[in-house]
Length: 431
Ligand SMILES: O=C(O)C1=C[C@@H](OP(=O)(O)O)[C@@H](O)[C@H](O)C1
Ligand SMILES: C=C(OP(=O)(O)O)C(=O)O
Image (tube, rainbow, N blue to C red; front, side, top):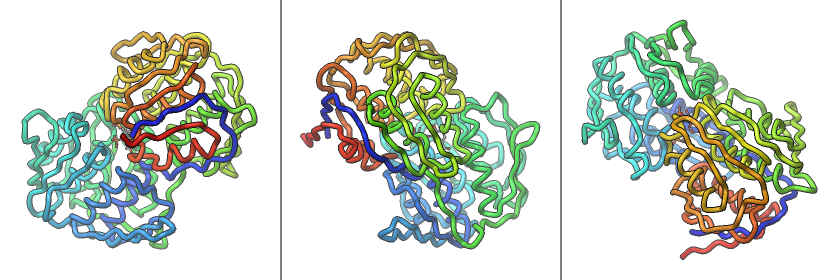
């Protein structure tokens, strides 16, 4: 599907979709448990991939009409899957499920789409090998397809922290059900660190003890997963909130309200402060979980995405609209996502007339609303690139067509319905 956007103002109320990160963890944690009820879960292409994995491990995921998931778990010991686990486009699924698979009493095979089969899995495979669990890439290049004979016993392991925090999350989740537990020593500084905080918060909610240490992280062994009262509720997703928030900041004269924006461990809550620092009119009532935003002239800022890689595409579009330079730093790990998002945003905004300066670990956008021209841009089969480019289309001079726009289903199903509800003039073309 291609989506063509005519410059439009936005107004009204948007509801934040549930957090993708919390939903993945809750589905898998319920799998590690005897079972659980997961309320307000995100049901998207990525979280469905994690649900499929739990089912292949012997669990069952049932979704009620109100979105509640009733999950029967595999109780700490995954069955050997009767089929290959297809993780689709989801890095989180592949990393978290690879470590879980190493607990099974037999071999698991994991694959994914072309994008996922090009992303780095090597550090996780090496960590599992150091823990005496066999795990390898079929092509020997550290990329999926992966074959995981296991078995994982627990123990001490060292791993780099600057490729993906998802390796740490994966090892903590699986390590807690090994006899010995797991102690993770970080070889380099940890990037995307708040995602491990989300993991620790969620583990605590499932009654599992894990913590930060001087060297890295650890989880005690021999533990069982069980959420208090058998239930877990997923908070709103601040990576997803970044899109309506940015839309309000660049294109809402009347004001836009975002509901479901309750504080949690998500590093991406930083988007509220970023938009404010750029000059937008923002008010966040944390107790009510409501953000009100409206348009004001924006100015370029410097912002590090070390902790918040998923915000880069949104900030790049804000930077294209803002006057002056917006410098996004500590961005090297943003190149290991669904696509190389640093290059993708530089090149696609370039098609819209925006000048950028790209370095290995930074992206500077030389902005100003008057430079944004409507164009046909590629969504790169990457949900965040698609949504960020659609935002640019709201204020460009002329129409903008985003190609391959259906991939928003990965994290934000209904994104274009929401834009239309907020008053955006858009056309979907299924050709
Ligand atoms: O653990 C998670 O839920 C995630 C961690 C981050 O990845 P990295 O740790 O690979 O940077 C983030 O980009 C991804 O969207 C979700
Ligand atoms: C990088 C992302 O997710 P994943 O790593 O799970 O594919 C994302 O949602 O932007």
